[in-house]
Image (tube, rainbow, N blue to C red; front, side, top):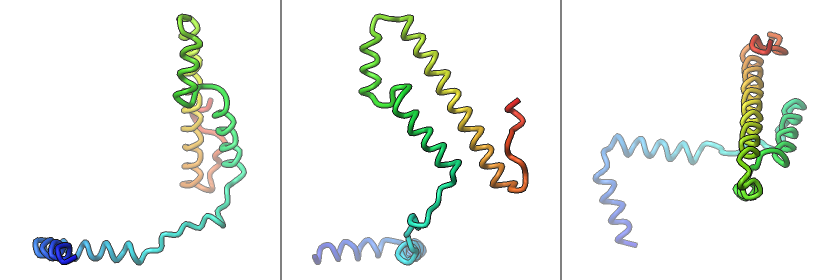
Length: 127
């Protein structure tokens, strides 16, 4: 125990006063700041809940999500180059559509947050 205290004491002697004060203030802020997140009263909008349900349903079917699913599909399509290329084309198209849809939704959400009085039903790029 004395050895540990001696090491701490020597480390504190080597540390400049400004660093010691900054570390002390940071530690005090971490100890004093409440770290609770009010999850009990959290509410999810109907739109967000429908999007989450849609994503959950897509995860059960469609493109392989895990390494095991990917390896099983790879073994099933082994030697069928045309089918592999067809699947790659379909999966790439699906991934691009999902990415574009996510970007559009994020833009709508951001626009609604920044300009709450503006109508956000359509974006100029959707035409």
